[in-house]
Each structure stands twice: as C-alpha cells, then as structure tokens.
Length: 448
Image (cartoon, rainbow, N blue to C red; front, side, top):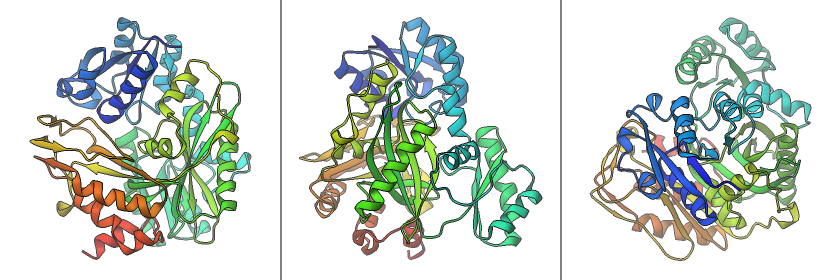
C-alpha cells in the first residue's frame, strides 16, 4: 500500500481524498495555487506545496510542477480527483514514466475512452448499444453536414475530446447545422486544444443514467448500480439520485451488465462511470465513459456502503477487488443537490466572495462534502461548486422530505447560491412524480 499520496486537485474533492487517506493511514500532500493558500485542503493535508499563481493553467494544470512536487515530497502516488488533469492521458503517461502511481486507468485507456469517437467504436465492437451517429471524427463542417442529413435531425454535435457540456451544440434543423458545428468546434479548440468533432442523433426527452463501476488489474469488474443525472442545465448536472427512479428491474439489470461489458472491453482499471441515455420506450444507448471519480460518487457510497475513493487507492496499489457482483446490494435511496456559488436570478452568474457565516445541516442520513468555512474567500477563477448536499433514506419519498429539510437549514452568507433554486426544483410536481428528463430544468426556467 502507498505510504504517501499527493492530491493534484483542490476544493471539496481534495478534502474528500485527504480524509479517506487519513482513515487508511496514508500521509497526504496538498498542492495549491497562490489563490488557495488558505484553502481547507491545504490545512488538512500533512504537507502542502505551492505550485504557481492563481490561474489553473499556471498551477493545477502544470504537469511538471505537480510531478516535481510529488518527487520532492517522496509521495508514491498521485490522486487527480476530477477535472483538471484527471482525464489527461499525457499526464498519466508522465506518471508512468516517472514511476509514480496514477490513481486511475492507464494513459492508453484514458486516451481511448477520452476520445468520444474512439469510445463509440469500442462500444460497438463490444455489443453495447450506441446512439446512431458518425463513426469517425469530423473536422469539415460541410462534410459533417452530409452525415447529419443522412442521420436525420435533430443531431447533437460533440467535441471528441470534450466533457462538461463544452464543445456541444444541438442542431434541430438542416439550415442551422454548419453555424452550430463551427461554433462548437471553436469552443472545443479553446477548451481542449482539439477541434475534432463527432455527431449523434439527438435523443429527445431522454434520461441520463450512469452506472458506477470498479475494475481491478486482474480483470475483475463489478457495477455498483446506477444514478439518474437527468436534472441538468446546459449539460451541467444539478441533482443526482441513486438508484434511478422508475426503471424496471429487467432494464436495470441490462444496463448494469452493459456497463460491465463496456469496462471489460476497454480493459479498464479503477473507478469509472459508463453513461447512458434512456428513451421513453426503455431503449438505452451508450453516451460516454468518464475515466475518473465522479462529482456525484457520494450517493452511490450511501446506497452501497462502499467507499469508492478507498477502492480507487487499493486498486491502484495493485490489490484485487474483494467485492463480487453478488456482494453489491443497493439499499434505500440517496439524492444529491449541487450547491453552487452562483446567482440563478442573474442567469446563474458566478458569485465568488467571502463566506461571512456558514451553517451546515446535520442529522441522520445527511452528508455534506464541502471545503467551505466561515471567513473563507471563494476565488473567482475556478469552478463554482461550493458544496454537495446528500441525503439518504429508506425510499425516495423520505429522501425528498429529508432533502427539503436540509436545504431549508443550509445557510451560506456572503455570496449568492442556488440553494433556493434547488429547493424549487425538488418541490416541482414533475420532479416529485419522477417523470422528468434532461429538458426538465429548461422547462422550469421557461416558466419563470
């Protein structure tokens, strides 16, 4: 087992990883930018190293500085968390060449599954259903339009190297395709330095269902049930549930088996997520694979009792999974609301600033992952995620009541947040009924 791990991240995920390491008796090294000198993850780690100025490109994305900090501190491994370098195959490859364990899949797998077009072809070969679309990457808009015309509208244009909703546009009519393709491609180049695109038939009124998997280095793969991530704004998740409400046991089983098949086809190791779209007729289609821990991993931990961060670390250290599929039992229901530093009334404008006072809800079945504390100043240059509020109960109805109570109790003063908007969403009749799809948030906003 590792003796010391460097966490190449910040915020609540860095805090989450540090806490898991402490429970495992593993020393931790935090890295931080000049803007994060007073951050909670810096205070909690055994050691901390400043790796550059505030902009992420000059600090958290500086591979050489992170590797230097790892070697100077004597850390055995790097945990990348999510975002930043977590799905960067070049960084994973450098770790391998420097004999530093990267807590995640190999660089080859990240490269294969990070390219959405290559991932589609891997899934097709494995017999996993995919949405009809392009089989190869596209760069030229006019050539891409010919494929879109043949596929039929609406289509969704995506960056092959993309994620997080960037480099993505929906073309509903032929006349709009070229403009939207070029817009998405420019955004992809700016965000990822890669303008290769691919295209899929857009599945209207679909549910976004993802399956959590764990895979060791010896070919053992298990899935830990699914999460419903359909509540999104501009492809950014806002509320997640585990398990997904209203899936038949037959469909749930099929999706879980497909996820395991997908992971095996990719020769995956570590914790990962296979994401699917499910239409109103119960057809499911592979969408993408996230080769990292997910923001919403906590609700799967609540319903399974499995600590996914600890499992990631053990797998990376070469240990065999001590879990088999029969050992994974889903109990109860969990819901997560992402609490962001933003103002919904001003088109969700980010709201960095100093936390004047903070009250976090507590009680049985309530978990909150955050790096906030009273007096902390949220920097303006990073993601707006401020906290993840999770609840666990025996069923969905009780979980919803618990979330309502927890949101009412949560107090963050000094900045704008989306707490009230989240409260509105969970009390909306369509959400309460469970009859919502990926268009739900936009529908709520259009009614305001």
